[in-house]
Image (cartoon, rainbow, N blue to C red):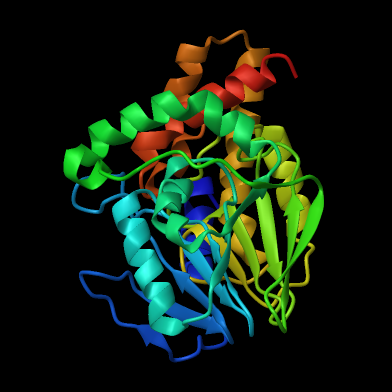
Length: 316
């Protein structure tokens, strides 16, 4: 079986949400709200689009979570602009009137954090990996300029960089009343500030961009570290996992198979090319290209992934 055949088959299996049906609740989308689905009692997920940010989608390209306790609510990632963040906040209000106590960011990328400002009026704690503040602050100017160019003035309006007020170093538990959220930092993988979140009441595990499905993975940390994290996470006993990009919910360990294969293919190809004395330019034209038809947005991100992998593995 070729790499491409493997990935097509794996994606066909893992892109289906869950083998067990998702609960029936779905908040109907409206111009003022994003659609969310209840994947477990009190756990809601909005599924982002498989697109680059644009004026039309307003930065709605990632998944976001809402967890409702008896006392309070946590929002997990806030999407890619103030405007779509407002629509996410309206979705929260459509399912509960409990206070939004926490906004949790799984990592620093704009499609997950640029909606934070829409929640300022709730005065939540903004919670993230303790490394996120440094990483986001150092890239803020570039992120803002790039997103203004891609979103356009109207969709960009209201965006601001909001750094965490509660840093997580290793682990932390957050009480929502009747359920707690366990937050765990990860070794450098997708980024150097990845964070995963487990809901104690349902076992739902939010993986952020440590898990991509359908949307090609994007490497901004360490390909070696990411493959190691995947090996660890595949051993978790979670009834459902929420990817950063992909279906509302998926099942372990199969959810990781296409991503693991893609990253392993890049690593193997790049190592081989380095051993043969090939250049970075040569690597970006060949490494991992057998996987091209298996992923959306491949042409937008793949060369960047190979470039990052080459820079890391050249000194491996």
